[in-house]
Length: 147
Image (tube, rainbow, N blue to C red; front, top):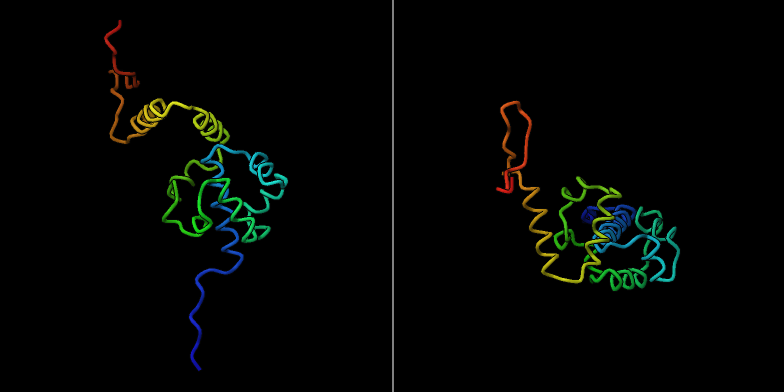
């Protein structure tokens, strides 16, 4: 008898993966659990259960969630199509400050302003950027020539 190939993930693990991807996309879209639930006609508690993998998301519900989060249902299963890498997202976690930033950023209508903000944040986060030090070892901002 030929042994069937081992399945890499269990159904529960897939439920948690899908839930995690729902959570990530919701946060990246600047939505609260309550806002997502309300747009789908379900409670925020149900969204919490989906996101933790406690409740399985039906195909129909996943389709509607994908529409609301502006991704195809397959996106929830394909880590290669993520908007942020797992490492990046784990580092920032579910910080309230991050969620506030994302929600505020999502409300900005001018795409040029959004581009400038992204460039600013990238420049500030760049590891190659080193703040000059004073002789006493304290870092200070570069002079802008204004005094």
